[in-house]
Length: 115
Length: 114
View 1: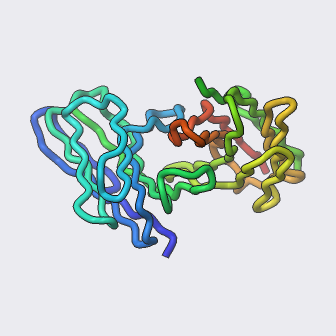
View 2: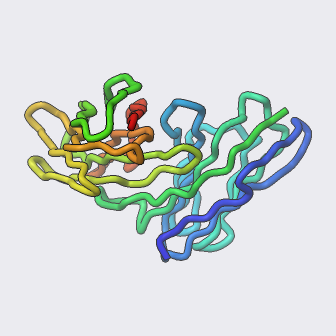
């Protein structure tokens, strides 16, 4: 199984809603990532978890709250988002965080629209 | 800091044409270099990679050679197909004492007509 799955595929939410994005992998990878991608732009790193611990937070606003309940799951909790947060949210995983040769496997993404 | 520069798209080709997408990078030390492809409505897939100078990465008819002297990693394919239409991202990852956060180029859209 070399797949990263993400749910939901699409999400529409109001600015006062609370929602969560879910990511799952069963490749035994110990590093997991959240990226944000706007249209026609490269992905921007948001968070990195290594061995279920938050290793990197790229100065992301607190309305985005990541969680790694176990080595296979990664969640992104959303609260009080702004319309400019509308984007494709990509999850990725790799064998380890460190090391140059660690290929990242990406999920298909969740298309988020904030009204 | 690290940076990756890709040619601006879109690149529009006819089927069976030769493809080159240019990528140059700025980084100290010896980064690893990657090409990712993103098909419409999907996430990124690793297309090929090279981890040291003069390495050639190849996959699905695509090739790229890590050229340290010109700090380049240009993507080539001898004969493109309509199914190759996608956005291609060049990226680098630098380690050895620094951050392992990947740096992506802006992406180059490829459109292949029948």
